[in-house]
Image (tube, rainbow, N blue to C red):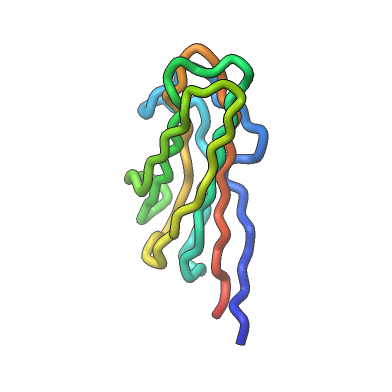
Length: 124
């Protein structure tokens, strides 16, 4: 039997992460997804710098929660400070994660375009 999957948007493509956000007050907070009916999956992310690069790189932190209210850092990725660059990748989402979301912050001087998603395994 084939596995089934579903694509979930956490941070929509083309979202601008304004300069100046901090981890405590992020510029972008993505949609939280209930993963209690999933069998894990993959988280993907992308940073895109403009023609004027930030002086400090943007950060995306994926966070996990047992109750959709208290969030713990799950995985943190840092972009770069190169003008017009794109940096992307994916990480495995463990089956034990109950809720997941992403926050973006940390870039200085210029905005960075960010996106994040979940490729959820919905059936085996």
